[in-house]
Amino acid sequence: MRVVIPGGTGHVGQSLRRHFESQGHTVEVLSRSGPGDWDGRTLGAWVSAIDGADVLINLVGKSVNCRYNEANLAEMLSSRVDSTRVLAEAIRKVERPPSLWINSSTATIYQHRFDAPNDDETGKLGTLNDPMPQKWIRSVEIALEWGRALFEAETPATRKVAIRSAMVMAPIRGSIFDVLVGLTRRGLMGAQAGGQQYISWIHESDFCRAVDWIIDRPEITGTINLSSPNPLPQREFARALREAVGTKVGLPAAAWMLEIGALLMRTESELLLKSRRVVPSRLLASGFKFEHPEWGEAARDLVARLKKL
Image 1 (cartoon, rainbow, N blue to C red):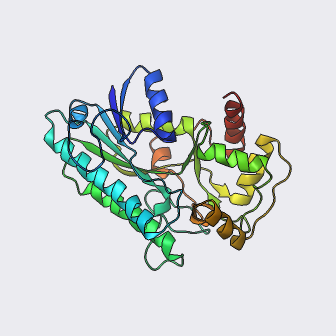
Image 2 (cartoon, helix red, strand yellow):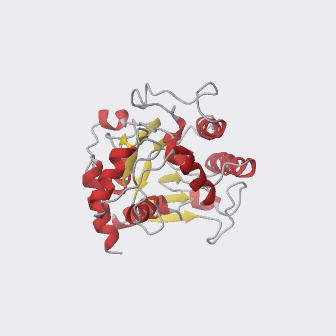
Image 3 (cartoon, rainbow, N blue to C red):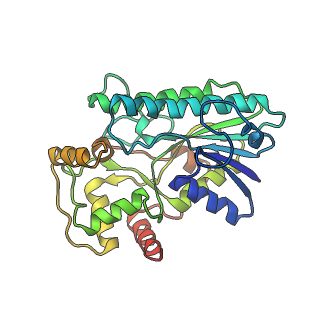
């Protein structure tokens, strides 16, 4: 296959590129820092990369690892929506449009809840009336607008899938998993704000395999959750990670302490405090089998691989 990945320079893009190239596929990454004139907003010479591609995987979007001020929220929205809309324009323009367009999305789109998991079909999406901080609601609105930009686009010859992904845990330096391991080694991965909020995650290998699964099954369209079938409370998540790393100490932190820490690190407490209890019902119903369904085993595998870097 020939696979085109806009925004593929991040950790998820790196994982997918290695995965596809290991199978003998050709991968072309579109990025602002790379060759060409890709800016995520306007048509240009980069459109030729879309012509004749088998699969288009859009990963463009400003990182959520930032303060949710008005400027950053605006860029989080525009980077996602503008790139989606201009890719739709490109697909309509080329003679040989890709047969499949996978657009990134996020598990943050679901409600902050503890009582039941959010699956693909009955999961409750966040709304303006949810009892959440306003900034959390804004991130849900961004996710909803992102999805509308994809599914309102007229691309009759191209199948469209939005992947609502949990955190992709990959043994890559600077990735979210690497950051969590670093915090664990410093004794800072105890129960956070009580530790009852759910953590949804997916092992790098299962994420890439799930993308393969979607590519090979033309009946899969629309939105689909990419996450382990076993999300778990943050307290248990942290305990299993400490065991994998070999650290006994995990200092707890109250919510107000996390707010201060997030401010100092120029990030947002939502990433730590929102309960994301997401399960992949459509993926499981289609017959997909996870290689790493349990966090304890997945963490041990990832830590062992990270040590080899």
